[in-house]
Image (cartoon, rainbow over all chains, first blue to last red; front, side, top):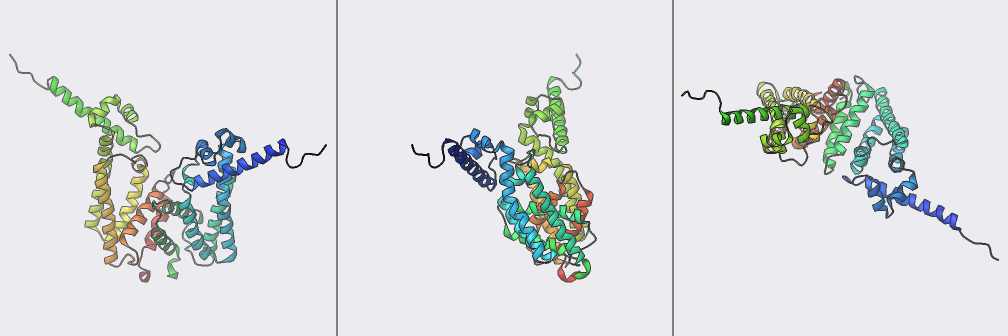
Length: 195
Length: 195
């Protein structure tokens, strides 16, 4: 009698589960980059070539699946913000990061458009880290004299967040508009005396 | 034999039609100021105390009703822009008008949020006039040396339109955020040498 080699039926089911998770996650991530595509379990399942029940079973629900997909996209953005804060001056970090953030948001409208009402703990935590990083850039630039100090940092972070996203979601995406926005915003944020 | 005085049956129907038009228009205008309220014929009819069929008959359809309601709201805004252009300097007109526009948009989210896909000729014409007026303020301010000339006026108008609306739709409305936005925007739009 020979011992079975390779995964038995249990191992096969586990391998299938891992594969289904990956397919569902890839499909959800792809749909997050397509403006106007509804982020339903059915749409994700269809894109993944799986049944809707399989997608739900793989993640325990739509919220958990989208939380994994969105946080997978946001994690490198948050990492990049921290990297810029560590490697360059706060004002240069802000300029570089905003340009990259607009490009990212422009390619992932659905992240803000279609996630209302879902429970997304990992995404919520990463968004808070993103806001925190931008606020650190702003207060850092205020401290080193490259950003006006007559505006509240929290208010300034909100102002930047709202307006940058409005520029990012312009269809079709316009690099010229993004450039003009960053020019006006960052000139407008300079200390009055320093210009 | 005495002649009938006052409206006869025909006159009564005309008077009813005028009254129904007014009630439907008032209801639609009120709903345009309520964030999150769906602008359906049913919602408008319910608010007006009329039947849905009566509302449709009064205007010939939802599009015509909303076009009348929205253009009734936009007309004074467009008039105000022209008034400011006539009465003050272009840069002062821009500053005053943007502050008022943000207040108006903040009170009428639905004008931009729920009119996609409708045929609204009067509204479309007034929006074009509004964009034209802002562009006149921008080119006027460029000519009198109070606004930077290194940015394309059309691009600058788009930039202002997008970002002002993003600030206006912030919930709850924040006058502090609107002030900070106008400060940063208008300082950022100044000629570099003049500051």
